[in-house]
Amino acid sequence: MIEFKNVSKTFSDGTEAVRNISFKVNKGEMLTLIGPSGCGKTTTMKMINRLIEPTDGDIYIEEKKVKTFNVHELRWNIGYVLQEIALFPHLNVMENIAVVPEMKKWKASDITKRSKELLDMVGLDPDTYAKKMPDELSGGEQQRIGVIRALAADPDIILMDEPFSALDPISREQLQKDILQLQTKINKTIVFVTHDIDEALALGDRVCLMKEGGIVQIDQPQNLVTHPINDFADHFIGSRKSPWQSAVDVIADTSFEYVVRASDLNTKNRYKNGIWVVVDDSNYFQYLLKDGQIVESDVLPNDMTLNQASYIVETSPYDLVPIVRDNQLIGTLSNRNIVRFLQKHADKGDGVKHLE
Image (cartoon, rainbow, N blue to C red; front, side, top):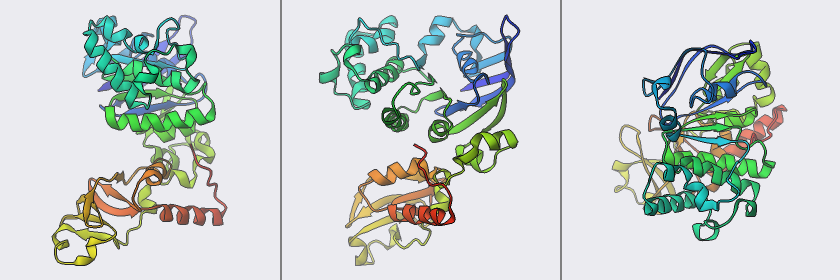
C-alpha cells in the first residue's frame, strides 16, 4: 500500500532528519512509529502526504510515486489527525465532519448520511452532537470528531500524529480502545506516530522503532518486546517486558476440555448445555455453542498480546474466547486463565502493571 525506497530528508539548515529508510506499510495495517525526540518519525509520516518533500528516494502509494500525484487529490485521499485537534471553531460538529466531502462535491444527503454513520461509529449520538459547537465538547469528544472528520470522505490512508498525547490518561485509554475497535470496522491503512511506547505496542499491528533518522527495527509488538534487535531497542523497550505483552498462545488453555467437533454434536446430549467451541474435523474453528444454540463470538489471533486480548475477554458475554492460528483452533482464553498467568508472574516478582 505505502512503500518507502531509500528515502532521506535533509533540511535547509543541514539537519539530516531521515537517513535512507526503506519499508512497507501493508494495506489495512496500523503501523506505529516510535523513537526518541528528533528521531525522524513525524518527518517520515509527513512525507507520505507531501507536507514535507523528501530530499532523496521515492515514496509509493499503490505502486505509484507520491510525487506524481496532484497534491490536493493526494491529500483528499489521506485523512490526517493531529495532536492539536484543530476543529473549526465557527462550525458545528456536522459542518466540521463535512469539510472534505463538500470539497469533493458530495451530495448533501450523502454527507449527512456519512456524518451520522461516523458519529454512531464512535458512540456519539447524532441527534445530540451534530449541532454542537466545538467549545461545547470535552477534549475526548473533540478528538473523536477529529478522527471521524479524517474518515469522512472514506480515504484509503489515515495519518495520526500523536493524536491522543494532549488528553488526560482516562480519555487517552478510552480512545486507544476506540481506535482498535474502529479499525476492525473500517480496515484502513494507518500510520500512527506516538512518543509513548506503551501506546505504540498496544495499537500497532507492527511497530517501527527509529533512532537518529534511521530505522532500528520494524516488528510485531510481541517480537519487538521479546526479541529486540540490539542494545538500543532492548533499552528503549525497557520495563515493557511485562506479562501484558505475552502473546495469548502462551496463556491459552490447550486442554480442549470445552471443544467439540461439529460431527459429534448430534451424537451426545451433553453439548446441549454450557459453552462449547465447535471445530470441524481439521480443527478449523466454526462457531461458539451456548446451551445448544449458535452464538457470535470474538476470536483471538494467536499472536495478540494479553494487553489487547484482556479487554475482549473482559467484555465477552461468554466464559471463554477461542484462540486461532490461521483459523485453526489452538486453545481458549478466559478470565481464569489470565488471573492464573498473572499470579505466576507476580509470584516471580515480575511487573504486572497493565500497559493501557
